Amino acid sequence: MNLAAHLLRDAYQGHCQCAVIVSNESDLLTPIRMAKADCGTVVGLVPPRPKGSIELKALADFKIDPRVHLLASSQLSDPVATPTDTIHKPPNW
Image 1 (cartoon, rainbow, N blue to C red):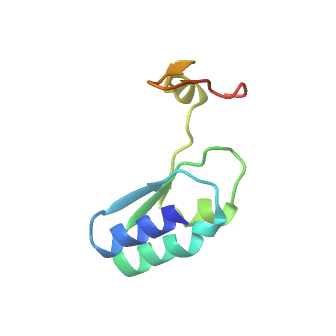
Image 2 (tube, rainbow, N blue to C red):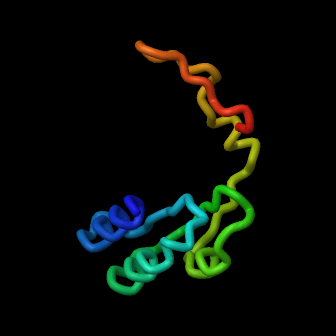
């Protein structure tokens, strides 16, 4: 819901000409349609997983499939130390 709200606020206030959505959530269909139709916002999609909403993929003006090796090389080291804790990433990452 936060992503949809920020997308619409930015589009209606003219703060972006293009938005890139990293999601597979079909709940974003209506806000994306509104941003495109009402504000002329170009909307791209980066689906985090191969399977996802076919309608969302069709609605996007462009789609970028993330490369697994680039995602892996972009992660923080494990563990990450903070002033108060040590954070470990989930094993399946």
